[in-house]
Image 1 (cartoon, rainbow, N blue to C red):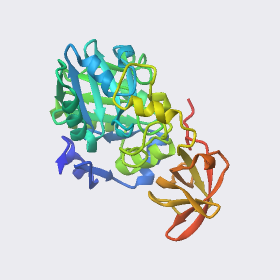
Image 2 (image 1 turned 120 degrees about the horizontal axis):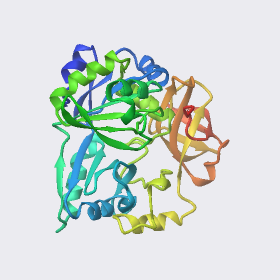
Image 3 (image 1 turned 90 degrees about the horizontal axis):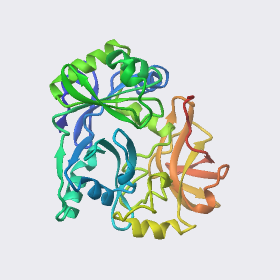
Image 4 (image 1 turned 30 degrees about the horizontal axis):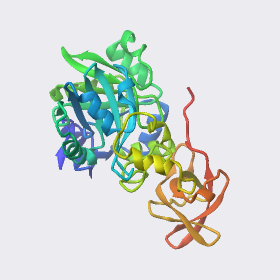
Length: 360
């Protein structure tokens, strides 16, 4: 398995190491519930160095990325970040990504760890004679993510009010760390306020990790990252998003601009948009404490009308929650369904998403 520059630190902290997207990553250090509450109440610290970081430069970088993703990249200002999808020809999702415009002719694409090689291959398949360079910076950089209501205060301690105080959501800026250029961004994948610090020198990763811990961050693993994102109704690739599921069915219309230039999958998505009978992603609240796992069948009127894609017992809400896809005529909030959990049907109600939303 691949290891991030902080692997030894995770092991020394007693992290339970698991395979994720080809990487050895910490599932938890104490307990998933404790780390979940730390992010909701104070500030958790995640090592997300396993995420792919692809830097695009060159005369055709803008035009090529615009043909690759579902948003209008030409209107993305320097210092802005947007969520986008990379789709195949039938509109299925190859990956959900973040597009950073870090300079006039430079873009950073942050992709899921398990999809990095696939996306690199997709780029080479479609680049033809376009004039741009792709620098895969995944293995020589470090990316840390302090997340939680105290994240801003903690990051301000390290980098100053002038930079952090002026940074709005989905923005990025060049900063300096120990004399080296670094990148600070403000996005997150937990439903809380959060920042990402990308160091271009991976040998400095442990020092930054220690500084963030000393400033008040609590180490957090992938286990609570999953429960946090599910409460916030954020899709996870391989669950809510796959090569067979399109972004419109997934409810990600905000990240699909069918009025912009051509991109791969646009024709298929235009056709899908016109369909009123497509399945919809919904939130589910179960009446009991049993957990509806991925693949559990959703039933109404004695017939299968959908499938669960993710489920957990919410530490924040203290309820069993899930997301899944259901037929359009069973997607309305308040609809009563049943979930087949190990051959026993549990009552469930379709509820509004997200399950949890922080107070701003």
